[in-house]
Amino acid sequence: MAADDRATDRARTGPGGRDRGPDGDALRTVERPTLSVRNLQTAFFTDKETIRAVDGIGFDVREGETVGIVGESGSGKSVTARSIMGLVDSPGHVLEGSIEFRGRATLRRLADRFSGRTADVAGVEEADRAGAADDDDFVFVEEWDDGEPAAGYVEITRAPEKARRRLRGGGIAMIFQDPLTSLNPVYTVGNQIKEALRLHQGLKGSAATDEAVNLLEAVSIPDAHRRVTEYPHQFSGGMRQRAVIAMALACEPDLLICDEPTTALDVTIQAQILELLGDIQEERGLSIVFITHDMGVIAEIADRVNVMYAGEIVETAAAPELFGDPKHPYTRGLLESIPGRHPDDDRLRTIEGDVPTPNAPPTDCRFAPRCPEAFAECETVHPVSVAVNDDAGDHTAACLLYPEDRSREESVETHRARDASYAGGDGGGESGSGRDAAGETGPTEAGTETSEGGEPARRGGGQP
Image (cartoon, rainbow, N blue to C red):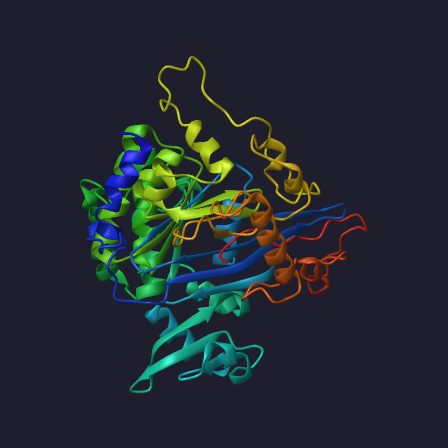
């Protein structure tokens, strides 16, 4: 089945196989997203240069929804995931931005454990919350039920490391490309699952063993009672990935981040893992962020797609719309490069040129040097995410060709004005260009400096 056909087929049911509403949106009972990322900027500082890995992106993940992040290697996908998880190691730093996570169990645990850094913002408008909270507050309670937090969020970028350790696994779990990096070779698979159960559910002894077996059965590992006593090297690649998924489920997360989890698997096993993730999502109501370079995989699993290029999100749309009517030239290039899309062609179609190195001073449109539709202003005007036309809804693209129902001059001026308002601090929730955040001397609070030639991070495309 072609990628765009798979995306359309998934669109009929929506997240977890649920029916969609009349406008194609999955029927949901919650208004607030499980995860909300705004103006996220992550850079790596060395003695000679600053590498802008993630440059001002924004996106939402709703309850029970799978959001795909797709792009070539080096586009910033994995750094985005690590920024959310609080796993960016030095010399990397999250410079700026907001990462709001909404998980009721996590909210209650952290509000209880860190009561001194919890703000009561019930009834307070969002615009006024800064005045209702202390600078070091990172848990925000919006509703209470018999003295217990009933609704609210955790601002991950403000959270101390102790809180992030409680958040990782218990609220947000992550699956990596190579399961061997997640499994310790000297412990049995069962013991590793039981450790997660002990830390996040408080289970020990036979209760933990029984639950470990149940989890292996839930991820379709046969003869789970025997396999629970085996070591990672005794599992096949696909089975190891299933075991890692079982470990993630042991933590009872609300959000699962999958970073290229099927890349190292053959096509048959890949399809089985994707089907497994869909089944688990339907059963548990999980939200999923799925990262890959494979457009075919994204079509199979994602409800919404964010296309990343050189640290920026260049296009966002519902999966069937993105595959059926891609707008950004880069997205169109990715789709044209899918093997088998043009069976009459003798050669595989490619995108000319290379992804720019993240430390190179970019053109204002970073895709311009490779874009077949580039024009003069692409070198001098920074594109921001705009609705592709007046009827586009939430289909956005960071490209000077849009809005497409305006003249080129009007479109360019729209981007120029929006970019200027962001840089001036009046960007509807976005912050400035990142120069103040990264600075010519780097993040001094971390004791790291860049040389005078170090390029500061810039704000890129994302949610408007």
